[in-house]
Length: 287
Image (cartoon, rainbow, N blue to C red; front, side):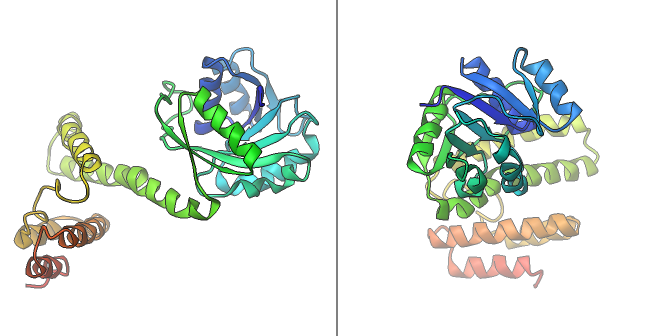
């Protein structure tokens, strides 16, 4: 059983998880950092938790959790492997895309490896602590590592769900669609509304109920039956005017999302083949 964790990384995910762990009474042996900024963050937000230099011998801990960018996981594991304490038997990383096998250098040092990915956004490292209660956390890897990841997730109030390594790219892409792409679309919509002359504060307050209501409707629906707006009404003329009004990259994003909506509506029988064709012509700006 993992009773003490060593965290690697003081970025958004790493610091937020370390803060959540200390708040939940989970012992944190230290946070491995590479920069002065990281050390400062640890001192400020995790009083009493050592900030460990990335080149120093690592303190004793039952488990090590790497919360670093995907491209840094394997190099980081290689760098830390010779510094690992012999008491560390489980190694996890927080990537939703890559398998636990990326920690192979730590596996060669005797660690059982896996991954733990909280399906939640960490907008800042030093802002309000992100609520983890009820958040889904996907776990993957060797059996012992999965058990450790499940226990850690539950201790933080999350709901662990097993996921195969082969499924992770599709899983991560879906998460990015729901989170990152939604963010990009809302940010683009806000910018376009500001360009109409509406004040920024008005735009923000105006969009909030629209965006939140739309997301809630999408989450409670089976598919596209709760979609509203011109595409759901098969209003090809409106779609054509929208594309004419939007600048290049924003129009491209509108185009891509519209095709997804048309396909979903058609598949559910919510629009006819003829209506789908008319909408398609509008998207190609044909009369």
